[in-house]
Image (cartoon, rainbow, N blue to C red; front, side, top):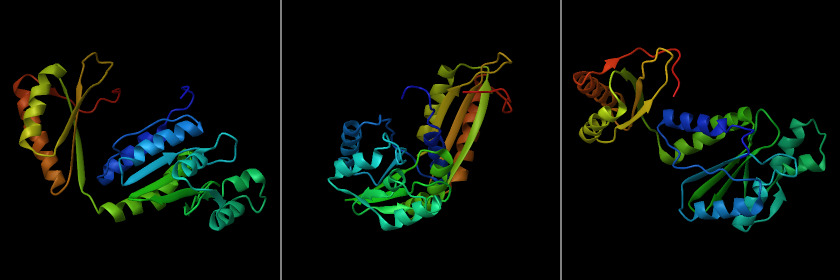
Length: 250
């Protein structure tokens, strides 16, 4: 939260889920503070979500306190988990220390999730209707556990999804002129998601990137239909469509 570290895990996870047809409903950034962790987690659990995923704070140092905060919020004790200890010991070739043993202390009733890259295991806790998953913050470790342990559980619980996406780049019209056309398409094609972004280009043209996505039956056809409608209507008011410029950024 002091700006030294960018949260690339959230960006990657959100994109990964979106491709699979799932979405993150909201995210929180919390300091390494037990009171703050408990406060936020309790507020989230009151909404009875299907999944809660935390990132970071599972390591051996004094400020790795995510699991302690979760345990206190849930009214559970931290205990050495046999499987987590075995995995941790194997990862450090038996050279266990109190700091390394700390990574095997999980809230009572938790299930360790195997970390195939690093040392600290992920953690899964069932709390009522909610599955709470805590993962290491190292991006490679986070992604590895997500792919092998988290996504299969999400798919199993929520079922398979079909999603399709497409982007249009148009210049020659301001974003405000495109807005009512976007609304027309959204109303005509129920469930289509359309978002405009003003981009920057060194060509000094100001293109608008229009992102379309749909999750559900016939996803590709829905996106193609929306793309065709948008293209025709924007062209009529002076829109000029571009190939994706290599220097674009949003």
